[in-house]
Length: 90
Image (cartoon, rainbow, N blue to C red):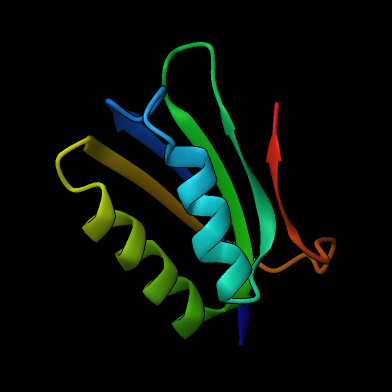
């Protein structure tokens, strides 16, 4: 079943290529959504795909940036179907 993961990452997640790594992981996994930096130095991401694919996606991000991520606040929501691809927002 398709789901949406709405995530706020905190820690040292800006200025290290975090958004582009998330974009790369999502693009390889056929995940739709977006990622962007926030003014409070967190990174926000919205991703939609099958739930098992999203769990692998989130785990890969956590593994790649385990030293930089202090917290990942994840909210699971129903998929909206609005995303055709994954983008970096500014």
